Image (cartoon, rainbow, N blue to C red; front, side):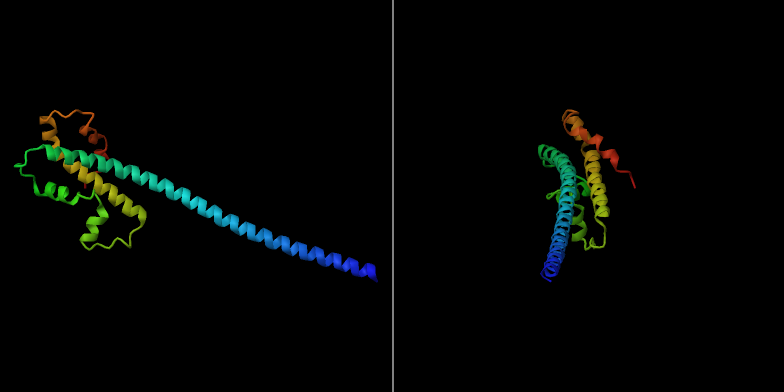
Length: 161
């Protein structure tokens, strides 16, 4: 009878061990999945951030060149109203959402890809407008092609509407 109890105890121990093993592996799988999802999200977020930062930096750098050119021009020059508006609005950069929010436009309904596309289009249109306006001054001041005229390489990305 004692051997029967030892066999039963042995089976109970195996059953308990199997349940413990299953519970431990389930917890490990869930934690591993969560960590994998988090790592993937972090990686995708960082890639998106890096791309957005690079694009924004490039546009802001070119915008800064135009503003420097403006500061080197005589103060008595009258600029067209659209150029004045751009120069006034770009004190904080060429932010499409800032402008649309101030106009009461609701950006909440838009997808992130739609907002990114609108921002790129807006930024390039701002740079294109400034490039067209400042082109005669660039030529008069003999600014080198390797400096501010590199903007021509980026302006054609935006199609005229």
